[in-house]
Length: 440
Image 1 (cartoon, rainbow, N blue to C red):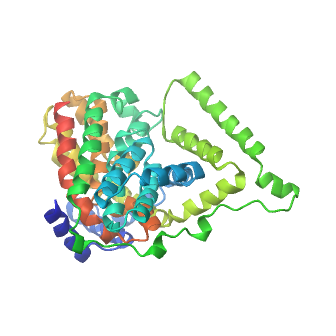
Image 2: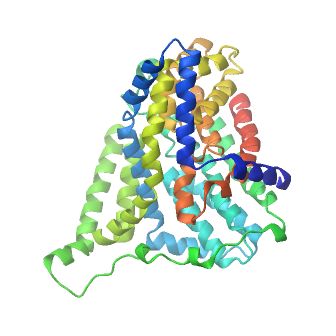
Image 3: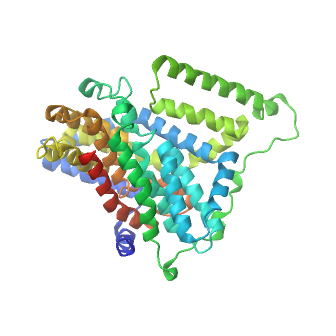
């Protein structure tokens, strides 16, 4: 593991550009590929790109809210104290790496945005408490734990598949969570990742002379992250800004709606439901409107890289979808598959497409029209087909740096600092996903 991680670290340090530049390069590659491999000309590809550029605004807003509400929840005083207390369990750098990986993986099962942020914050707390920790590996471990997210409660593909009106409903129908998240194969994959990932990061620990420690300045609390205290002024505006009564009333209203929703529609969890749960829980834990708004403001800073890149990936998705490139890639995999090999080949095709469309919901739009009818014709359960798409996206995130941006923003690191460890994890975790899709 050390040899592999060192090899890939050197490789990405030399060849992996900034994530935004990476998105621009992928845009150029897709543009040229569409002209070369499809019957469409340059003007067509320009139109596909421009038409798709703003197509994912609603989804981008949903994903941004998941990230922001997850960050706000993770930065609440109660959760922060919990992170500090748990970080104190680690007494050695090895224990710290294992603890961060496991903690991030569990948090990502609850909510992907929460997992990304709490993992990075947890890694910083461990770095503060455990001298000699390799900071790069700690942050990499936090991101590696993100591998579990699509099998958890905020997985966008299973949640979208379970949501009436989703783009694939006419093709595959509404696929309940009992056929995706709450299945034996997902349980096997999730438990296996929870066991194997901490062991992997432990084995990737550098030798003492290779350890890269962190500048203490990066670990000090940013003054802007400290919640605003109530002033001595007692005006109506100030009282409302710091009113716990107002907070609790709104939280009660939010929870009342959630209870009503679950009672009348059953325990159906989609993207909007997850956002509501974390929105009102974060508001409750922060206590006052002003404190929560401060946390949201701090969280929004971490979305800068995502916001500027998402339209480009939406444009790439437009080119993939309208030119037929996405279908060509997917069909190339499924054309050589049968009932038994289909899930794994769908998984691999999803991983490949994730380079160009690093979005679970985007995968559902690009691959769903090809994967789901093929699954039906081969007699493959639609839940397995949907999760094959989901797992491929989560898996290839270890080589696609798009979703590492929030954690890196918190850590003060660059993408090249962690991707060597992540690519090593990609190789091993792929075996787990393929076993789960093939035999369970």
